[in-house]
Image 1 (cartoon, rainbow, N blue to C red):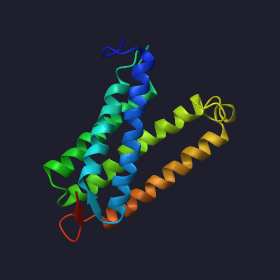
Image 2 (image 1 turned 180 degrees about the horizontal axis):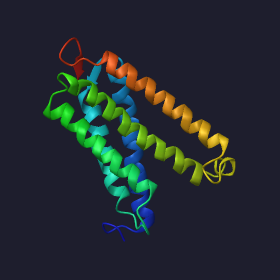
Image 3 (image 1 turned 60 degrees about the vertical axis):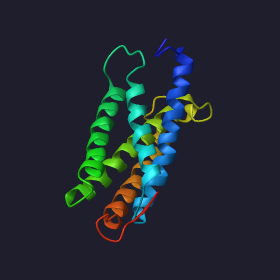
Image 4 (image 1 turned 120 degrees about the vertical axis):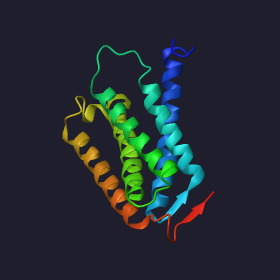
Length: 168
């Protein structure tokens, strides 16, 4: 039992939170790439991505390994992103710091999603049973390239002090 839920029910809750974080994050990050801040989507993205990492630490584990390291990195990136946006109002260097940390947080969530997909989805697992085979590496490479592009576009186009339109 985790927070009063069976392990399967808690896992489902964690997956739902993760998927909401990914979907809302894609909307929020794509808006940054067009120079806009979608306040509601951004709050939903940041909150659910924090919850994804926190709930990830609630699963029973035998030792501290790669999933936990990714969770720590994600939480640090999220703390910086949240501070950059809400405490420092994305002014000066905090603008690009926010974009980079938000994109990194979303990337890590998607990265873990790809790992989980290759481990759990029946038609993907045989393509990369150990997570080191070419289909897995190619999928992760494509994801990384997409997020590098999002990061570059976001840093170039998101300027909250200037002509950025905040949409609620």
